[in-house]
Length: 118
Image 1 (spheres, rainbow, N blue to C red):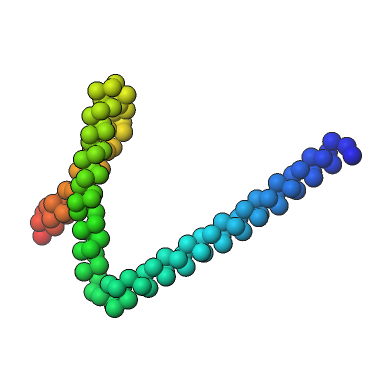
Image 2 (image 1 turned 90 degrees about the vertical axis):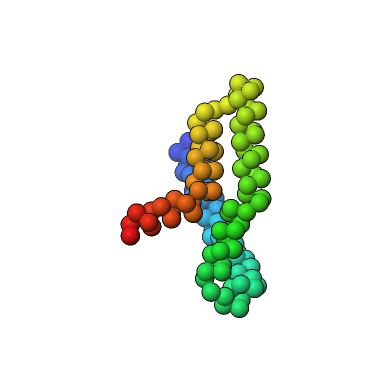
């Protein structure tokens, strides 16, 4: 075998491996979709065709509830500890603080925009 034959064989093997990975990725994505649909089907709010408002209110409660507040406090504490140690990346600190402000201030921001628009 010469060098060009070895190269072409390796190139074909890589192409076949990529095609196999794409097939596996598609199967994994379809499995995750089916799993998500199964979870949604057994949720009481959706299974009993509850109004969208109550489902949206539940999502809002998850994002602004006690667990999220606790995680935000822990994130700010971690920023403080990193700042004391001199290891704080101010880029990350600003992203964390802005994210917290947007998550917990979302209702006030939307109310302000609605009031300004009307």
